[in-house]
Image 1: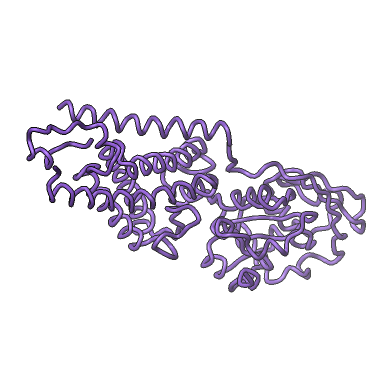
Image 2: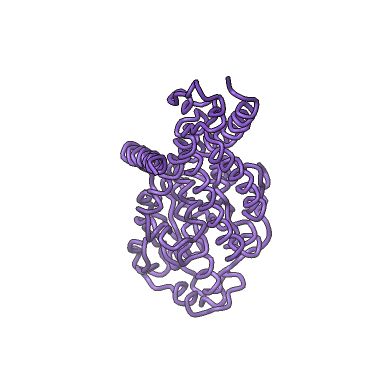
Length: 219
Length: 177
């Protein structure tokens, strides 16, 4: 009985020691699970096309609602979603400005960046999901890939250009983790997270690609 | 004089302790150098109460506590210090990890990264599956050996045990903690 009591005490002490070490570790070297606030970026968007949106270069979009609204040449309101500041410009024919001042962006902002070719898109989902379908032109970087080394796609990113990371939307958190890693490990301070992710993108009928990422196979 | 049997069991314990301990030291250090990555692995298991975004504090705590528990228990096991308590801690962790693996990868069919050894893949490559469960089973077997035999003679525990010189048979019965 006394032996059992001593055994339990030893076990509790081991656990307590681990707890104390973890607590100390957390206090000395806290780590982030979320990306830091992204660096503010102002992007000049090309003037919206004069032609109605149905004839735009939006690829195989199937849902006209969201797209049509976004493409309509309304002055001064290029986007209204999270992460987007206000657009400037008084005429439909004038270039507009898109201000990225929040880390998380919504579909509208992601679409504007995509249409303007003003950002690099990163898909943070697993390879099978990426190959089945991804935002057209998106590169593939998962948390696991970063854990295993420097993903080849990192060489194709620029610190001066916004990066939009997305995953499966909903409670998927890999986009936040990849964004944090791109910021902290590689210094890409203009990294944003498209919270709606791939489901929202496809639901809006926006352009997608399929197959493996050729860049990911370089390394 | 220790009997042949006692020496044999001590050797078995030593091999089991060192094998299991070094695996866990390696696993723990790989997680401790990048706790954020381990937090991501924990999140990948999609367990209630351990999701980034909703239970950040719990995920952070686990991402630090588990590797430290692994490291401390593994070092104790290698040294043969509080051998049985350390072995039980490791076997309990392996049981918990195995349940998590089974629940996430096999029961719920999630495609996930194990994170068992940080960025090292251990003996199993690719996504989590039966291989990881077998791997954990083998490691738990080593833990059970250490748990049953104790530290044996080549252990720190043995230093704190006074052997009864008058009873040679006691060599086989000594509790090394």
